[in-house]
Image (cartoon, rainbow over all chains, first blue to last red):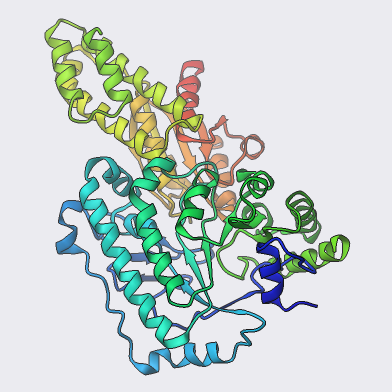
Length: 325
Length: 211
């Protein structure tokens, strides 16, 4: 039986996997690594960028607060005065848990993985609000380019630090680029603003020891796949059923792999049903096949919003492995 | 190209720096303010259709709405004198427990461009707050409610239920949001469902006209 790492590589390289890769099993995400203050359920925090997040009790996640009082960047032409990237210097004790975790991982079996969020596009709308971030594409393109480069430089500084400390094998990088039905911007506009900065940052990660780049965008983004390939993404995690994943695999398999096809919305809710999950897993596995595809909930980490859903999904994938391998 | 057609195309293509001047030129040439306004609404209809079909994206819709807003600023004094046509008031908000505002804001923008006077209650809006807004404003013809999470779908159901059983009338209820479907909208008794901002404007207009 292949290790999780071997099986993943066989799957994304079109080789001979001996089972389906089961969701996030190949990634050991080092969440202890210092980055920035994370919102917690039921609380409101302001992080090191000055962005305020609220997480209502009982809801699925945090939301940036963009009322007049809390929006960080109200005029993008003044971004250099307002936006101050936090330091990437953390004392040894802040790294201790992350280093211990990374050292405990059997790297023959799993990829020691950096978690990085939010990506440059999300950062622009977390700082400015979505409308302003998208209007700036037309109205203040030069300032937006400069801000994106500044955010990219910050990520590279952070990458240097974490690579020194834990010598990761993989990067799990969040940046949502669309809604469930469409990308937020056209592929041409995406290329104009985000392609080169992402090529720069992902090249830096890869030039410094990262073997695998897994990018999370739980959305429609089929029209952006050529750019994903160009920027060096190995696996797009979060691919929703709206993308027609089997067609994407047929067209782009071998250049990029797809991880998802199990939309969290209809599966991960209060009244979740293991039978429904099993039906969806069967559909996903039979339509997408054994290569360039990893069945996975579209959620952006190895958890579910409702207890038991992630595990039931994994169990259903095991069943499909028995049937199909 | 007739000036009024230039206004329409200017809105459609998001010419934020030109539309105000084009509207003024159209007025100077003797076009009726209502005719110019209708040209801009028609331009936004085209934008909404293209968005629904995936031919354009959110930035293009935002920039077109901003262009229209610049044109409306020039027209406003004239429209007030002549009595602006309106589809009535629309109360909009994201339901209790849900802080998503992007989709709701896009829908508000498109409904405003279609001719509604908007009352935007923001996010995390209780059903009582929706009711109060209907009481507080004249001519509420449409209430648009958004839910973006499977966990806030019950709040959407409660809101629609509260509105329908309130004894207040004269308005329709339009619902939408990522997890919402036509089937769910029917089940909770909403008058209409819109899958995106472009079709929300169409549905809103249709509801009022059928009214």
